[in-house]
Amino acid sequence: MTNRQSGADTEGKGPGRPRDERMTGAVLDAVVELVAERGMGELTMAAVAARAGVSKPAIYRRWPTKQDLVIAAAEARVGVLTVPDLGSFRDELRELLTARLRQYRAPGVDRLLAGVIGSAAEAGAERSAYGAYAGRVTGETRRILERGIVRGDVRPDTDVAATATLVAGSLLFRMLAEQDAPDTGLVDAVVDMVARAVGTEA
Image (cartoon, rainbow, N blue to C red):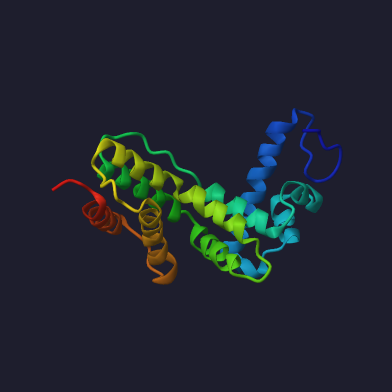
């Protein structure tokens, strides 16, 4: 990546990657802060640039559209998780949902995710981009289900895609639609219900 020689986004004369990482972090933080303060409707590239202390061209080079920027901000806060093999689907599902719970409790994440979901339904939205993000978010749930099938503690006839959607939607619906903070009680309930539905344990 070539170094930028001018503009508010230049910092020092070091290699491009550390500077680019600092700029990326500042921009994505600014998106979350602005959405939390003003809502998605008031989010503009100019406002993000001003909050992050970078130039608009620098943002457009990295994220050509506001949609790209919002998805990147969402993925920075709620993205791919990795759950180790714990020898039990139930334990792995609890680990996954507990990690998601921590992410959802971070300031501004509720409004950011509400904005992402709402934006996906807007006219002109690139649906495949939102679908790809959702696929990455639910990917680890699918992986632990498939691992459970191989291990034998998840039923082989389990609809992996439908179960992953159910798992992902539980905490989100509580937070965004019911306007109530998801908690460990909800995690425990979802883990128990899903494990009973698809598990092979008695």
